[in-house]
Length: 143
Figure 1 (cartoon, rainbow, N blue to C red):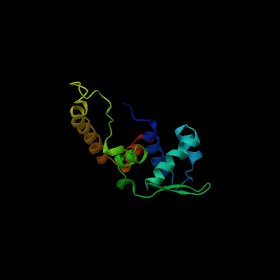
Figure 2: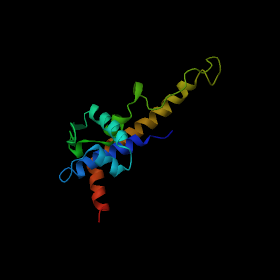
Figure 3: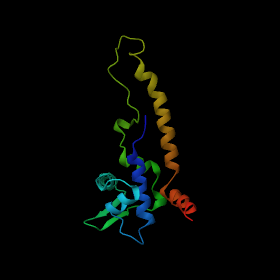
């Protein structure tokens, strides 16, 4: 399984919104140039971030701003904003296995605990890191 680039682009958007807020209007075109992607993709992800309550979007060319302080915004919050988890489970398990087969009839019960353990570990780790941590890391990379 591979997590889509929506997540890294969402982080890019939020980092840029905070980093450039005092010097630029952070618009979809501005962000598209920074992420080197199409503004339509940026606008779609911005819509997800807005719907999750993480940003405010000014109409027209007004730009965006965070609705929370960077230290209050975890990487888990950002992940869930652009990758909502259906039924509380990150991993999907095929459900049409042959019920009379020893493997097929038990696959969900077998995999669920392992998959939930992995999901909980990922979510716990992402909860510990914030946008503020990334901003601080960014500042050490800028010479």
